[in-house]
Length: 218
Image 1 (cartoon, rainbow, N blue to C red):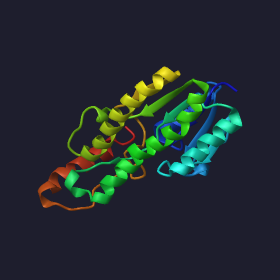
Image 2: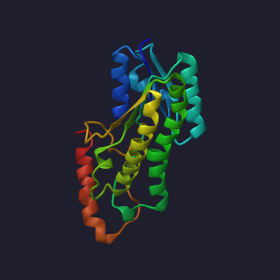
Image 3: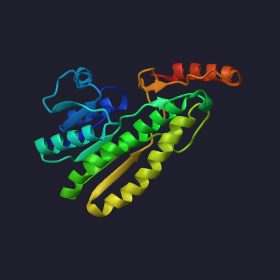
């Protein structure tokens, strides 16, 4: 059976590639996304070690249920890949307060929900690896990425501290800070743009959108 991996955001992009690589390495993968069918479609149903489950990471009870089901079925969660997230890309003043809060609800609090759900199972066994997908934008912010960076800076601070709390209990932590990858992370399924038009920013916003469109998938 290999090790048991729980991967969030596994229907596309980096999460899908990680899940696929783990399967190809002989591991058992519980792959989650908001739609389990999307996970199965992405992986082509070609692995008997793939177990697709629906999970909205902003739902703390759902996260606990998925963690309990995984540990109950396979006896362990050896590796957690806390990957699910999205990007609010655009100038800060063009975002509503609700959009900013949604960014934190998913990228920070959703990621915390999953870690909080999985950690007890790892603590019980005094073993495990948590892999948290942050971003280079969690280290350096730039115009057009202020809101996304703020959420990832928060992930960095939380996880650096949490990792030290877990280490004496035999649980290792890995914080991953990718730069731009050849995925569709910046298309309209994973990225959102501000909805407030501010003339002072109009030209710069147009240039930024053109950059994002050109970079997506490249």
